Length: 302
Image (cartoon, rainbow, N blue to C red; front, side, top):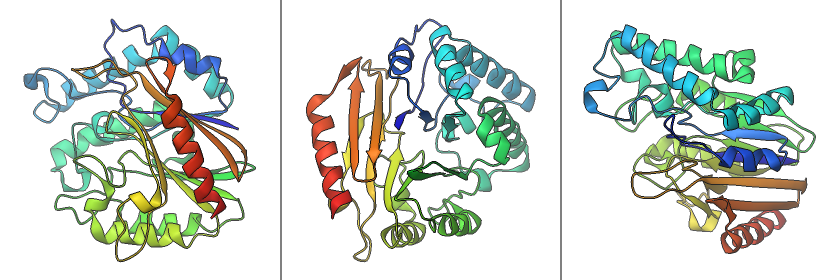
């Protein structure tokens, strides 16, 4: 089973997006787009969606999705993944509305924008639409996939991130008979300016749930425009409880400073044999890939 994952598709129409062709050549079974699949708030601040009316917000979002989903290289890959029922997505801040948006704390005017945003996400991610939910679980022979909703329940003040309803869902879905659990979220556990560990109470609950799960848990994340991994002992533990093994791939197009073209792939032969490959600018990052694969094997073995 092959899973390709990446995030932060900050493209413009002039970009050819050749990395999607390289991903398509790998013939993955699943493609996880881990948030910021479009960028609603990239550009001159006068166009910032927070300050503009709903009519403008709808028009801008329609154009952003149209431009990305009709890029020939991206479309070829997305069409193939949809035929396999293999496209999964995370609804993070830039495709939700704007940077670091906390949806539960918004006023009614801006919540109307977010409601439209969620419907547009469903229109472009058929499996999410089937569940009528941003967060859901999906089973394969070897693993249960769990996709989280970073935005709908989040509030200002670093107290509420996933919310009680979603944490209860997570607790229930972590009880199963698959040897692997792969949880996908937009935010990392402990890297970047906005991260899960900032929400200490919920982060502790998350770590307690994943550390006591009968299945081996791997957490996939994006957001921070780099490829990296964080073994549990190198992660942020809370009250002595370690987080799960975390693998991050972000920055599929470019930043202002550097063209990155980052993506990653998991090749799962069985529950104890997983190969991790990181790619940057079309070239495999051999040392990083080897180190991650070895550390992950130790985590699965122990």
